[in-house]
Image 1 (cartoon, rainbow, N blue to C red):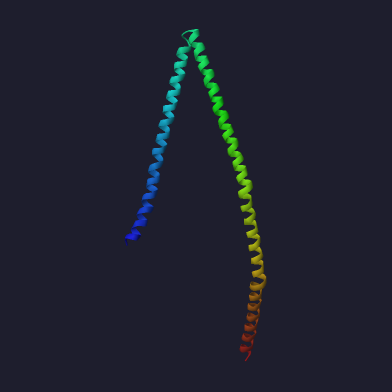
Image 2: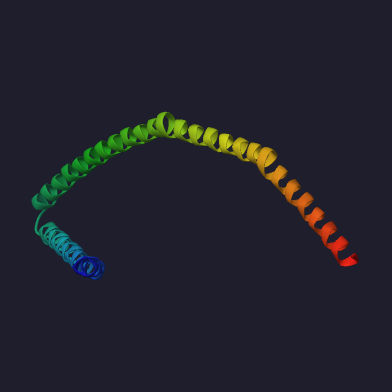
Length: 148
């Protein structure tokens, strides 16, 4: 009796735990996005305030911006290289591992088709013909019984 209640408890508590985990993860993600947006707005506001002070500050902000842009280009380049390597690995996986599995599955299906055709020709059709013959013999015997 305790074995029956344990699976019921697991099935009722597992979906509840999944439902509870999802909203907290969504809330954490929302809070993180809001914090990043506020920090970016603060940085932009600081740059705008510094830009209107004097020409030296504008040149410093411009140099920092150029350095940040170069850093972003470097990060994007590295990401593209990683993406290309991953794409090459995926292509290799599809070519060398998935294609043989598909061919093996196709061979198995063809073998099963042959087996089904063999069983149909050598077992099913003779049984159906035997049943037809027995049914006709039975019907003929029934006809002779009624005439007597």
